Length: 107
Length: 119
Image 1 (cartoon, each protein chain N blue to C red):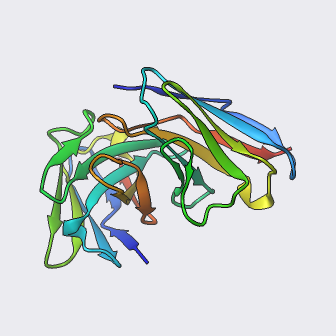
Image 2: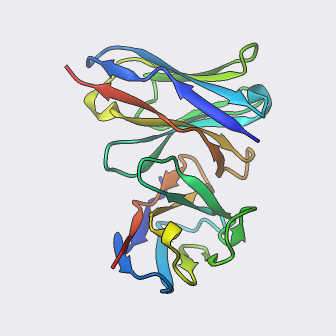
């Protein structure tokens, strides 16, 4: 199975900050990576596919990059709605696997 | 707009069985690639099972042989039959649509149904 490791597990930031979340795969997954946002008590929301492609309707302050084993999710200017937990997911091979999550909290 | 609504969760004793359902609207379940993802309380996301439009099924090792994914085409629903339930199966279970057979990201999610396995 491909293991997905996210860092940090928790990130404290302020509105307006630029934040970067890292996701590392245990083996190459090419660009087979997606990102999700999950607010407390809610279902995950799909954000990014193929490592860097924004889903329709996702604000442009979100961006993704990377390929192979190393990926990043960047929020260029943190907004109040962005305080949430973020998960990466590899879809290159079964079983589909998620990172452990990064909680972005208010500093 | 795609909507997925799960039901069937509840409190069940270890070793028991439960059947979850996911009603789809705005999509035809049988023509899509559908999946179940779960989240234990306070934990991360774990993929459970998938079924393709052609009928192929896939399972996580943790549920293989105990869980079975299926569709009811007449009712436009997705189901997850869970047998031999264990305490570690306690989780919120989400129904989700996979974009395609090769682009296996989850582009639509239901609100989830909670399964608690406890005596």
